[in-house]
Image (cartoon, rainbow, N blue to C red; front, side, top):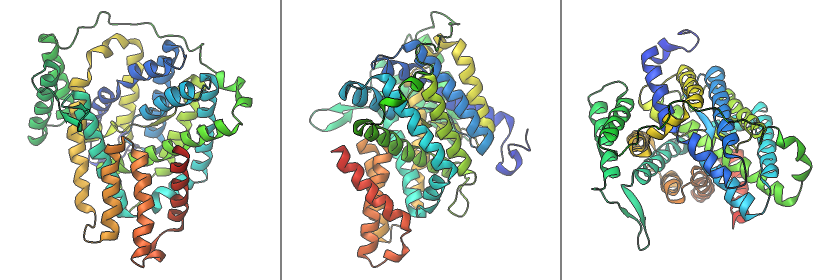
Length: 431
C-alpha cells in the first residue's frame, strides 16, 4: 500500500493521510446536504439526489485516488448545480430530466477530450506564471468563501460587502475555530485543521450553538426517482437551446476542474517542470464521475476546492482520497450526524488554506507588466465574480493582448489563441 501510493517519495504516512482525508471530508460534507436542497428546487426527488450525490462523490474520489494518486475529493459542483436549477430548469423552463441528460452528454464529451489528451495539453501549455496566479487566485477565492460562510464578511447594499457582527454567537464560534487552527498550524501540529474543527464542534455543542443530532443512523433513500432518466430523454437535447446549455456545462466544469487541479497540485508540491504528473488520469476520473453522476441523478461533478483543506493537513497521495471515499460511505448511513458539522466550524479551514495558497503570488514575475496584468486579473476576478472559470477566462483574454502589445506574440502557445477566441464567444453568449 505504501509503495503503491508512493508514501516515501511524497514524505507522508498512514496517520497523516488519514487525518487529511477526514479533514477534506469534513470540509466538503456540506455538499451532501446542500446539493439535494438545490436540485430539489428543479423538481428532483431530494432523497434520490442525496444518494446520487454520495455515490457519484464516492466513485469519482476513488477513481482519482487510484488512477492518478491525487489527494482530492470529487463531488457535484456548487456553481453548476445552481446553474442547473435556477438558469436551466427554472429560468429556461427545461425539465430536470432533459437538463440531467445535458449533464450526461457533457460528461461524455469530457471523457472524449480526456482520452484524446486535449484537456491535459491545455493545462500543461498554460504559462507557469498564470498557473501560479490561478493557484493564488483560488486561494483568495476560497478564503472569501470561508469569510462569507462564517459570517465574518456579509453583504452590504452600499458597499457590496462589509464586516459582519463579530459578537454574534455563530461568528464567535467560527473565530474560535479559526484561532485554534492558527495556533496548531504555527506550532506545526499535524492535523491542526482537523483538530480545530473537532474542538470547535464540541465547544459549539456545550454552548448550544451546535445542535445534538436527533438520530444517529438514517435510512439510505432510493435512487429510483432519478436513476437512468437520462436514457429516455436523449432525443430532447439536440436543440439550439440545449446545445448552448451543454456547452456551458462543459466550459465551466472544464476550467473549474483545471483551476482546482492546478492549485491543489501546486499546493501539494506535485508540479514538476511546469507539468502535473498523471494529470490525464485525474481529468479522466473527473469526467467519468460526471457521466456516472448524470446516470445516477445529480448535476456535474468536479474536483473539490475544499480538498486544499486536507492538503493543508498533510495529504499528499491518493490514500487521502481513499479515506474521503470511506467517510462518504459512512456518511450515507449516518447522515443525521452531518447536521453537527456546521459551516461555522469548517469554513475557517478555507480561510487558513486560502492564505497558504495565496503564497503562490511570490512566484509570479511581477517585474514584467505583460505578465503582471493578466495574473492580477485572474487573482482579483475569481473572488469578485465568485467563479474560478470566469477568473481564468478573463486572464486568458488579457494575456495574448499584453504579449502581442509587447512584441512577444511568438511566445504564445497556439492553443492560447484558440482559448482567447473561445472565451470571448463564451462571454458574448452569457450576455
